[in-house]
Image 1 (cartoon, rainbow, N blue to C red):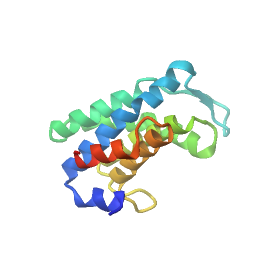
Image 2: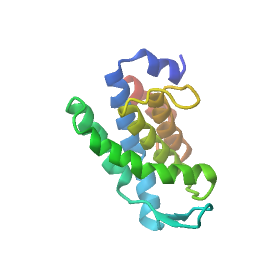
Image 3: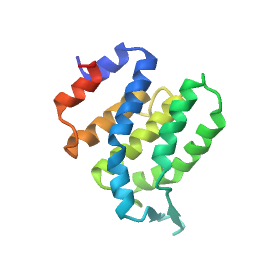
Image 4: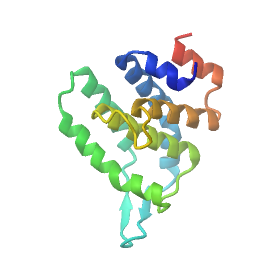
Length: 159
């Protein structure tokens, strides 16, 4: 069974639990980068300089967790965080902002976690948004050798 098949076979609650868990496990990839680099970029369209808050990812994960625990109250907070991701996501896609592999994966992962919490179930590529979030975190963790595939399976399957 592939990861995608496994994720689609478990409850939505468990999907979000895994997405949050893997995002938290991958968060140090972002934090290490953010601690040593300025989180700014310049867009190529109008030449404006933008900055990203170091705590954006951690605060977003916390907000999603709180949102889900409180039966979807305080959606405005999630929408605010969603707006904070808009320009940086475009900058990453346009090549105006480059991040190291692991930091980029966790950035996208948290963004997709947020999108899934907001009810955006499918990506533009017709994949389950929550699956994409989990997969991106796992990809970053394995690529940066933070966790082994065996350790990943342990988290996935509760081993």
